[in-house]
Image (cartoon, rainbow, N blue to C red; front, side, top):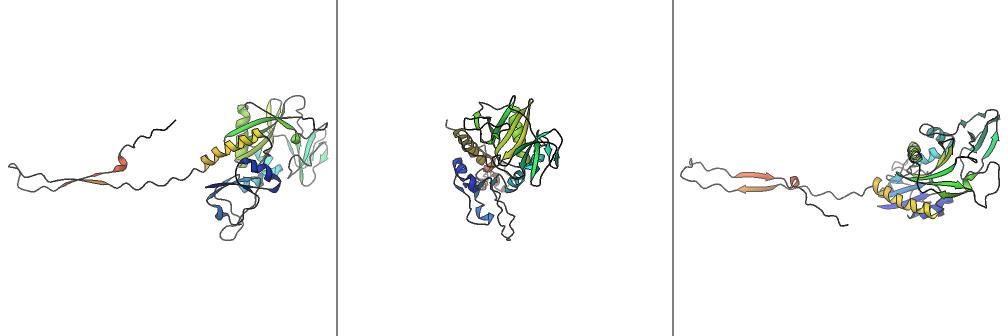
Length: 297
């Protein structure tokens, strides 16, 4: 089985670093053409055709299903799903109350583009949504957690010299200070969040505020822009592919019963004069204990 990455143009260069053949165009519009392949969707939620001609098909073997990516792209809806399993900042969809500082974002956004921090009261415009602004500049911090299957990698956002001074900075363009380990609570909450949205691979943006983790959003195509991130995904994806799509082993041939025939015993003086029938004993090979296999170290 071949493993392929199916991504979008803006993430093509980044997705190529995952270590698998990468494309933004699959060649055929029929999903069944790829039944023997394993497809990793990296931010691409394009639908394919069924054999009956309806454009509702998904790949047979896929990581990050199209529907999960679509749900995640609708940020105002996905954050409400996340709120069912993890902490999220308060959501505002109609208006921001008086005196409340809120982050206003487009419903579909990338890399923090189009966001602003505003103080209520204010009305939420069509196509946008708001979340309560949690100030982690003095204590706490912002983290990104990359996840793949049951594995996670954690890094804290850190300001670099190239980042301009702002009262409410967008930390999407900041760098990372990779953590040597991850808090067990953050690890488990990240996996719970990914499961809720339905993503196998991606990243979570999280704030640590007043001793609690608050999830901002998940990303189904996080940039593979650092060696540590690249090596994490390359190793974790190999394990996840083997775990989720184990190679089918050839079926062992059906055991053929072995028939042992015992010859008739010769007649002796004490025989009653009636010739005995041969005794037939069936022995099932499959019932024999397996031959031990010694694994080489």
